[in-house]
Image 1 (tube, rainbow, N blue to C red):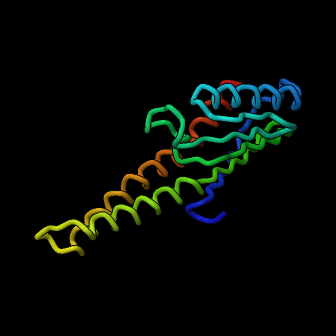
Image 2: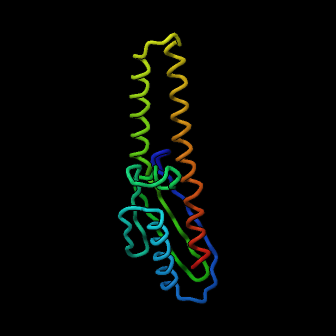
Image 3: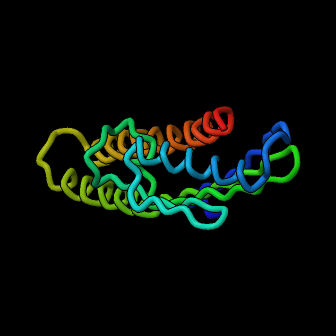
Length: 156
């Protein structure tokens, strides 16, 4: 994991061993794929014990959509007896590149403005504002994504 480009997590969940592990895994994968499609993930693909997907800022979704900063991700599930282990990985590469480019372009633009405010102050206000906005999107995803997985685990 290379912060902040990748974010990985693991959730271990107890289940009643009423149903077959393979049946539970298939139901989990189907439900998590459906949830990802509801939040407009792109290229949702279920294969074996894994769901792969992509997100992007270039989709027509609200900025509150948790997949806005996500380039791609996958969710892997292993079901044994009475426990479920879910491992997920989210990649934020395009988001980080975009934010870096915006900072560079914004600072270049600000540097050429004619103002009585010193350039250091102008750039010093721009960079934290942009970083705050991007960090907010990142944290929103990092906090809400595990909640989505737990909601699916509760419903299976």
